[in-house]
Amino acid sequence: MADWRSFWDGEHAIYVSDRHKAVHYRAIADGILAHVAAAGLGRDAVVLDYACGEALETPRVAAAVGRLVLCDGAPSVVAKLRERFGGLANLAFALPEELDEVLAGGTADLVVVSSLIQYLAAEDFAGLLDRFRTLLKSGGRLVVADVIPPDAGMVADVASLLRNALKHGYLPAALIGLVATAVSPYRRIRSEIGLSTYAEADMIALMARHGFVAQRHRPNLGLTPHRMTFVAKPAV
Image (tube, rainbow, N blue to C red):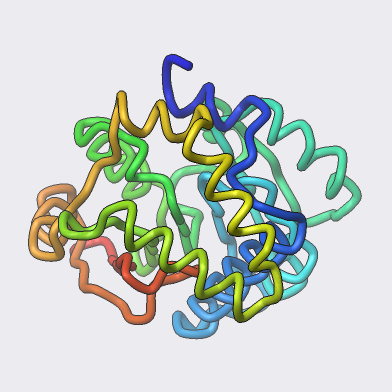
């Protein structure tokens, strides 16, 4: 396994059960809709869900906005999205290298990026910030979620998984999944490549260097409360 993009484009067992996957994507959709509401966006809003994954709750999000663009780096994931949701009129699908074909610069009201930047080198994330700055309207909003702080390691992730599994009824599957993860490609690639982490102040400063005014937002979007979400707007 050479890189994270290859990992997500292949077969993996990052979700311990179908229920775990459903709960995860429901939480992501809830978070996106909460940020749509917080930004005061209406039914004409243009929203980009970048690194969207399988986005199982796409119909619910799409029904609340004018146009929803789903972008993911894994070709197999984008193909599944097209197959599953291609009948929805206000959707567009793209790989990152195709994004400019479906979303013009200066047209996005909201860009949401969840659980991605830990898999990117710092220079690649910096390049993405510049790209998002170009895609957003002048009053648009960027949400970067699931940012891992330097003091949060694997133990915190495991504890979060078990808490959610107990709450949502998939604890046996979670326990079995933890054993499987110990010898999985995910564990190997995480050990070899690692995950990028950011302190709160460093993230805010980095976003400022790339043309954003940012602040931390609580709670984190998703199922991992020990991680961080940042909301940013293009600097005037």
